[in-house]
Image (cartoon, rainbow, N blue to C red):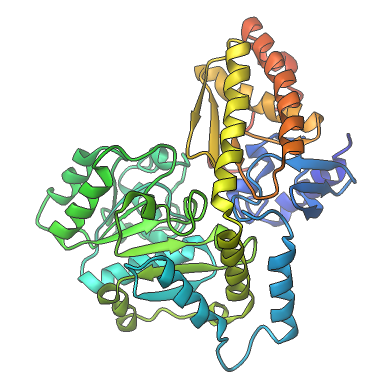
Amino acid sequence: MNCHTGIDLYKRAKKIIPGGTQLLSKRPELFLPGQWPAYYSKCNGVEVSDLDGNEFIDMSICGVGACILGYADPDVDRAVKNAIDSGTMCTLNCPEEVELAELLCELHPWADMVRFARGGGEAMSVAVRIARAATGRDRVAFCGYHGWHDWYLAANLADDSNLDGQLLPGLAPAGIPRSLQATAIPFNYNQPESLDAIVDEDEQKPAAIVMEPVRHSEPEAGFLEYVRETADRTGAVLIFDEVTSGWRMNNGGIHLLYGVNPDIAVFAKGISNGYPMAALIGCSPVMEAAQRSFISSTYWTEKIGPAAALATIRKMMSCNVPEYLNRTGISIRKIWRDNARKYGIKAMIHGIPPLSVLSFKYEDMSQALHTLFTQEMLNRGFLASKAFYATYVHNEEHINAYEKAVEEVFKIIADTINENSPDVYLKGPVAHNGFKRLA
């Protein structure tokens, strides 16, 4: 297998693109430094071709979770091509945005109003802006990962490790105004006392409580209800970040499964199957505050995003896609669990089934083992990592082939653990774990 074209192109990219890529999660250093193919020439379903003509089955993050239906879904692409043929930008507005807003409110009866953006991070920034406008307050209590904008990274102004436990360690607040210090304060998932410490700290109540309703673990009994009650008690706007969790376990926000409604819910990624689109839905008393703040962007009015979202959501509903994603995720977890047991490997599995994460539990050696797993799976024709994001086109053939490869690779990992020698098997550096400045 020759991946040199992509590797060489990435070396060129690092000289002219700060950080090498536009998205941290697609950096080759996070997967397999010096070996990851880096660029694709074509993708369809879950099949990916790199610049050297190698073909892989994507059993990893599948477009960082954006392509729930699989790459180049024909129904979504058809809707997009029709939008292109009718013109994607105009002095007038596209009617699809009204149709999409009505569909989102129909699926979420608690919501009355909708605003659109084109990416999850910017949509979360809009949500926080609306919450601050609605309450006249500044401080935000948050839990989980919510993007790259100033309001969120400001948490690391007070302590540059505040965000380490929220998903990505090492996020330096460089370029964030010092005046934002103490405006974003983290609390811990399933630990209501950590939220109490923020809201009861002083008389300055938060403008918003922002959280992912589910990420790596299920909410403990009463936790989401307690957060809802705390928002009501303090007059804070409750914002659920469903950019990652939404549309995978059910049609709509995962909060619907738990019966706890926020004041604003934010969606992106999976609602449009790889085309840029994001939505904020909310109750009208809060959402109306958007009219008191300037929140506006030209490309939030283009036609492709709403057309793609409508086609994606309708297909997810008609085909019951979340049920399929759940079954697929359970199958992958069983493969990991069975082989870990067979070879005596200490491993843990996190997340909801469609967003499953594998962790080898060997302290300082763990990251090397994950790198070895990626290396050996790549050699067997799979894009694979510690995370598996299920899609509607992962079929039995893919899963069976993956199972055979995992068994072979887990045997190698077991030998590595027994010999305490991951360096012997690795052909390059250990993968990065979180944000690092690139040389």
